[in-house]
Amino acid sequence: MLAYDPGESAAHRLDARTKLLVQTAFAAAAFAHTTPSGLAALTALAVVLLAGSATPVRTALAEFRVVLPLLAAGPIVEALRLGAPWVEPTAAVAPALASYRSLLLLGLAAAYVRTTPVRESEAAVSWLVPGRPGRLLGVGVGLVFRLLPVLQADLARTREAMRARLGDERPLRDRVRIVTTAGLNRVLGRTDRLAVALRARCLSWNPTPPPSSLDRGDAVAAALAAGLLAWAVWPAGAV
Image (tube, rainbow, N blue to C red; front, side):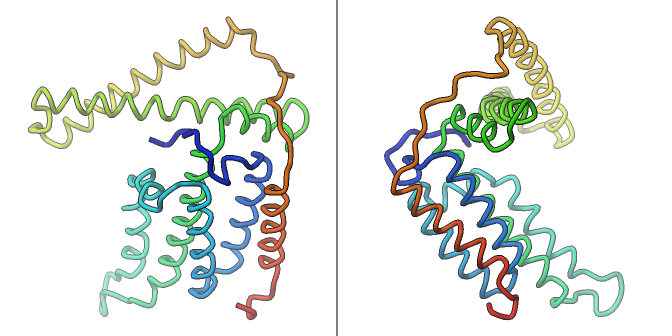
């Protein structure tokens, strides 16, 4: 389940702002260098970053297993033709590289979520975007990070209950309808309770942020981000 997992890894000790900077720089480099050699270099870096965040590659992929078939389907659909030669493999190269780039970004996103408390993410976003827009964006980020794991658990319990009642023997259309209906009911119920809880706790537009400080590890991460940003603006022919 995609949620914060306390730990003592190098990424856990970094400031949330530094991690967001590295994420942004990595994404910029990934969009600037979409060649196989560029993505190979980014893959090696992503493996190192995942290791530094105590997030196994298999765990990162499992977090987004629902998205994986869509990423795999893009190149296949792009290569198909309605007439001869019916399949054009060269047309699938660019979509395949784009799908792989998205996979790398999702893996780093999973590492960020697993190593960053929600409250620190809220404070980092509010710091990056000043004023009420930043606070509103921070609240939105916090709500997504807090509600998504709960909704995933609700859907998992719904599917388990359906299987316990032999629901897996129903036609696919009925199973989708049951899970979707139950999921929507859960979402509506939780949003109503969340609204009441926010009013009861007097949601503040200017809360006291959690303590944060930058140390040597943040300096190293910032240097890495600067290198990635410099590489992102490097001439494409250099890779």
